[in-house]
Length: 114
Image 1 (tube, rainbow, N blue to C red):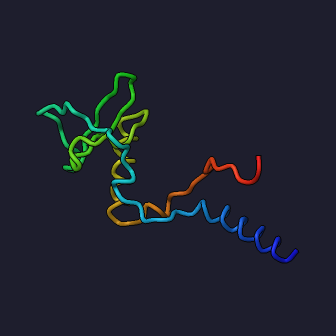
Image 2 (cartoon, rainbow, N blue to C red):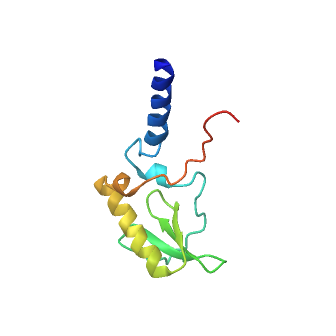
């Protein structure tokens, strides 16, 4: 009986612990794989010498990074919102504080027997 309680406590700890960020966030984990903008205009205006904003065909705005060159970063409804959040996200990555603001709302893992 005591062994069953220990197993239950261990499972409960694992479930609660899965929502904590495991590693320090880095730029590579913030980018989607194979998400590179291939056609970057020559006259593009780089914001903070780090990214530029592109309007998508659906009317949304997307930030494109300068390093790695052409990497699609954030998408949003307003140009100002994407600029603000791209600056914030890059600053947090640079400072190493992004994991302080990151949490998993739902992991999608089904535990127990089905």
